[in-house]
Amino acid sequence: MNYYIKLTALLFVMLPGVSSTVMAEGNWKKGRIYYRMVCTECHVEQAGGKISPAEKTKAEWADYFEKNLHGPQDAAPKYAASYFVSREYRESIKNTNRAAKKMLKIPDEQLLEDVKAFVVHTAKDSDQPSRCE
Image (cartoon, rainbow, N blue to C red; front, top):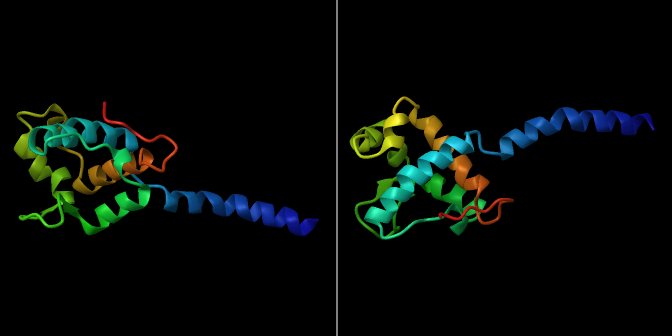
């Protein structure tokens, strides 16, 4: 009996660490704002349509960010996905995009984590798949 109590206590101590490594470290709500107001706007204007986070699974999004390539794999030139959350990119569109202007002071790495958190939070196989509406 004492063994089960110790095991249960150990699990309660270890589980918060495990869950934090599984989940994205960003703020999915900030990521949602950026994704919808910057990414979606650009895709509508430049790529011909919205791209919903629910079009990919969590694993597919992880692969996308790991490869860090934006756009069709066979297209040239190839852009790093991380460029589209960079301060440089936000500076280039700040006069036409409120969200980019508002988020200028957020470090690139943090904004990238926020966007990752959003797409993972609302991926096809998540509890709350998102639809661009």
